[in-house]
Image 1 (cartoon, rainbow, N blue to C red):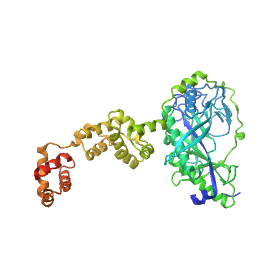
Image 2: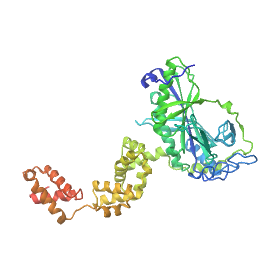
Image 3: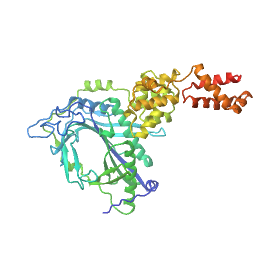
Length: 503
């Protein structure tokens, strides 16, 4: 049995092998209390300050199921076109981890609350790919380990570890796909598109913020290769806790290349967990992966079965919001944009900010222009998501209104956005403080226009001679003199009036 860290070219790997994926996504629910006790789930508290005998697994402590957690699980299952169990149970998943205070995880095994569903995802070229859902089940999160003294933050090389059990017991939904076959060379793209669509669905249901950068949504990428024409799956690896859309795609691509290299060299793929490394997109070995029977599942004796009434399930079904793909199609038509443009807006995370800005009074074109232009540029430069920028939809709508009223031009509006992002105040306050208002008064503009004509006599003569297009050079000179604050349209009119030329 051998392993290798060398890769083969992606195209070479796909010429020989057919990738099969399985994606397991953990979603941290946005409940106020934990899954089986009343401890707070609020982030940022002092380590181990949000714990009790139940979530610490102390003897004699008895769990009670969080009703909102069950409701959220049903909503997710319905939105994923799943069947909702009429009766299901929790189980104990037994394994040792230092951040599992009970030494078992309360989860679900053979009786999940939701099963047998699907999610249609749209790829970058518009193709729709259906991902089949095996199950969506309820469980609890583990605590958090902090490894101290090493260079990497991992346990290897650390001098000691610290444990914070505040996160232990926070409600999770694990969504597991059936084997994803037939994606071929587009398998990494399918993985990314699926997780992106799932994230939008979770956010639309308002059951979680689904922030991957904060660990509220994490993806385990299972991948195997099989030679074309063979039905049996290859041995899989599981890349754990991948926490961005880009990384999901990169992890799948890297594992395809790594598996192919191992198989081409005559080696054997280990069934193991692997760690993903953001800095170079590689994965490294974690531990040998257990099979389900190694966890010694058995029904949780301290929790009663869950049997959601059919009337309640149908009530929840009727209250589901408009789902993301349908909403995007409606918005695309409302905004009058192409599918390619809508995909770009989606990729930028700008759909919700644009919708909110329109709700504040801006027209769709203006809202899209500023979120996809100056604000997207700033987000890219600072490495933040659009919704993390210190600007509100109401402020963007106000900037758009100032432009529409002629009080700002685009150049000045960019300076106002810069001021808002710097925390200088509201758009109106920044316009006042910086003196950014467009100058449209003829008296104030006249001197600058006369100066531009006098300083560019040859261009003025061309305009008098009928080359009206040359007026742009004089308009530019006036804009330079006025530091971009002149009303360009009015400047053009004044120049042509001074030169006795009809516009």
